[in-house]
Amino acid sequence: MRPLTDNEIIALLQRPDTWVYVAFTPDGRLVGTITLCLAASPTGTKGWAEDLVVDTSVRGAGFGKALILRSAREAFRHGADSVNFTSRPSRMAANNLYVSLGFEQRETNVYRCKQYDSLKLH
Image (cartoon, rainbow, N blue to C red; front, top):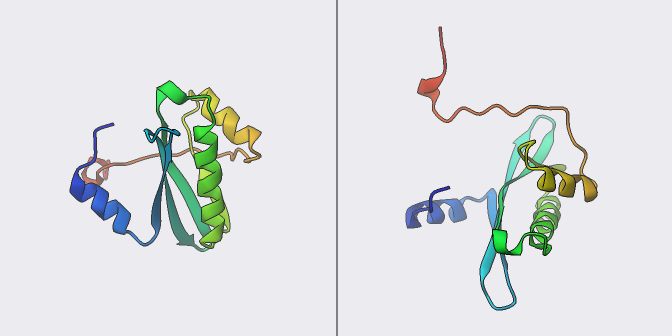
């Protein structure tokens, strides 16, 4: 993942439907982040926690769990009817953490398009 520019950080933090939470070690070192996005849909307001990142030097120390719980609590506080976390199937530790916290694994697949021009329209 490439570092964000100052303008990208400002744009992210200015969105009214997006929150970024961070984790610090007791000595003040930034070791984790997670982004919470809220979206209204016909089936209710959904919270999406995205881009959970924890420094490899502190994995297993509870920072990921703390960020997940904080973003879930904040999603419901901001009016979400549900909160969703996604992770690649190969990221077993993350998936096991979600299950251990009581999240229900949904039977869905996520498909992504990063540019409209890349779609096959024929």
